[in-house]
Image (cartoon, rainbow, N blue to C red):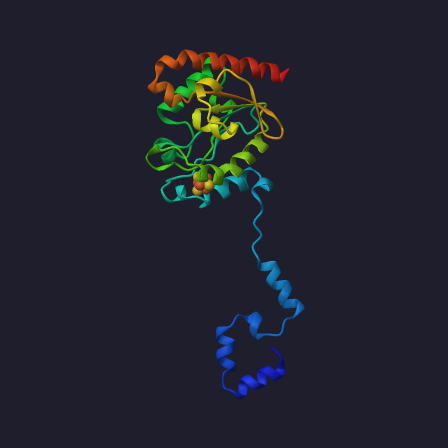
Length: 236
Ligand code: SF4
């Protein structure tokens, strides 16, 4: 505001009103000092692809990007070895995961642990996460918007882990990662590649599905042997 304008407003008896109701930038002469202070006070939010593990986990914990944040108890980030050769990616947290903040716990988690044990792997030696980090109500499948909102977090987890092999666990994860709608029964038993870095990917049944359909366990066993064999090849 110029002095001429200030005098004019004072004469009109409205200078005080102007100072109280307009932001400082509109009531004061701009100065280099004021501009610098305002720029340095603007919060800088780093893009997800620049975050380290701690910052990424904090960003997920505070995330409200999709409506799933409204009904979650805890975000379910991921667990296990952050330098693992093998990364398991499931679909979404269920009730037990939502309560504990950890993926693949409860009956499905015990089944996954048993599957890993069958190929001489411990849960702690692999990295485990889901394509979405918050529980969908009533355990429904996450929709496309929710999957898209959460995708950057998963992508950064993959970048940080740098796995030699990704296992897509269940139909939702396989469809999202492979951008397909082919039945999981047809996707399993094949080798795929994921992303720009062409990380080898194998799809298999979700442990929760195996609990409902025990007859499919023989196929899951074949998948585990395939995973084991492929991992051995990739480590050579
Ligand atoms: Fe954010 Fe993912 Fe949770 Fe949606 S599901 S609120 S995108 S962390």
